[in-house]
Image (cartoon, rainbow, N blue to C red; front, side, top):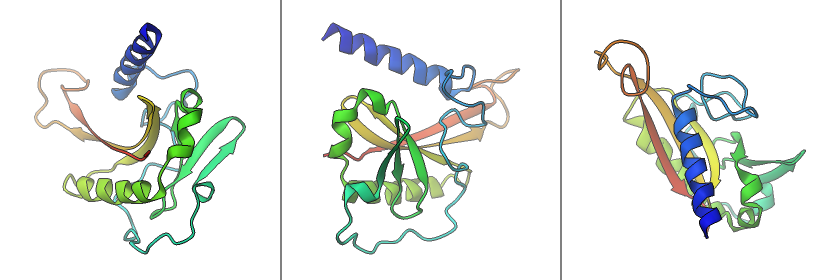
Length: 165
């Protein structure tokens, strides 16, 4: 139990450090966004998400493993995203629900529309669940002080939806 609490604390600290881009994990490439994906960050969706029922679709149609990394394909956009920290939640990957995934993508796209900024999706495994997440960086104008940094010249909008049953 103590080990799990320490692990969650470490993950929280790592998330906080990478959220402002001040530190990059060694396994991440240096990009504008702290959470890598195999595609470029999404701006506003160029196509409307489909709401057609996903008849006869299986989890294997959306979940893939390549060279020890796990990827999830978003149903509406087709964006392929690496699952962060999947190695710690291998037993939870088979609990991803396609219906929850489709609903989460639609809901997060809808919520981000009001901000009118570029945003990107990422998928993270923590707290024994898998989460579809979205992040956007917005400028603070005028800045809250001098210099650069989270809360000074920019803020992060981060939303998430659980996609496991």
